[in-house]
Length: 100
Image: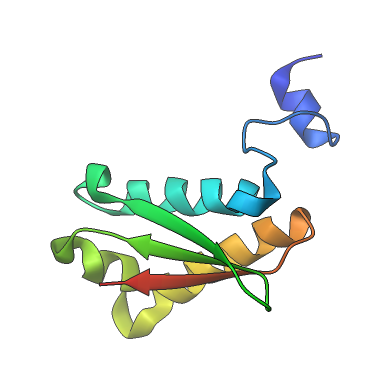
């Protein structure tokens, strides 16, 4: 079975399974952020656990902040929705905070 087939039917995938560190959600957030910004080396994701679930704090270069937030916050809201869905797949509540 190929890696693609394994990930489609619930097998082993490349996103990671460590729920304490954000697992799949952290990997998705890192992937999206590095593709959006001009300086991918400045992208950093910190995880912390609180009562509501896992909080992912996204740090990017100051010049890239506008690209991550987007007009009227639409890009940021889309990122939050996709990352929340990735966390839900792992059975965890995930919240994204974009930090200066």
